[in-house]
Image (cartoon, rainbow, N blue to C red; front, side):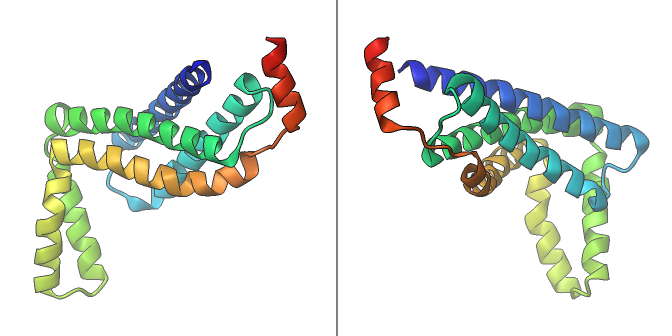
Amino acid sequence: MKEENTQLKSAMTSGALMGLVLVLFTVILYVIGVATMQKYNWISNVIFIGGIFMGQKVYRDSILNGIISYGKALGTGVLIALFAGFLVGLFSFILYKYIDPELMDKQIAFLEDSYIDAGLSDDQIAASIQMSKWFFTPIGSALGSSFGFAFFGFIFSLITSIFIKREGDGFDAAMKDIKE
């Protein structure tokens, strides 16, 4: 029971830190006027993957004394992404609902332009825009961020956990429980 609490606390802390860095990055893009440009998404992805990796590593090294199973690393990575997604989703809701409600229209126009550049027909563009409009509402953006972060957190954690896992000696782990 104690280990799950420390895992949750560690994931919450790492997720909050990653979420705040991503919110700060979004604010910077918004302030300089490039919030709708997709060419900066790679930076968000680096922050996201790096945040998961570092959070897993901190949990392994600081809490678990350098030993973590693949499954525990995977679970920690998903929790980190979930907490970060909640913060980013909350920020998205506030941004679209209160700070700049017109930003949704700008992003829909940007999306439409990218569909035109991709050579989609008018019917395909209209159908895609109609489906996408829900995600550009404040609640759609918040829920989409939360679920998207959890999903991609799972995918990226599958990979990062390979590098984070470190199996210990079973005898030492059993003796640790006896010594305590």
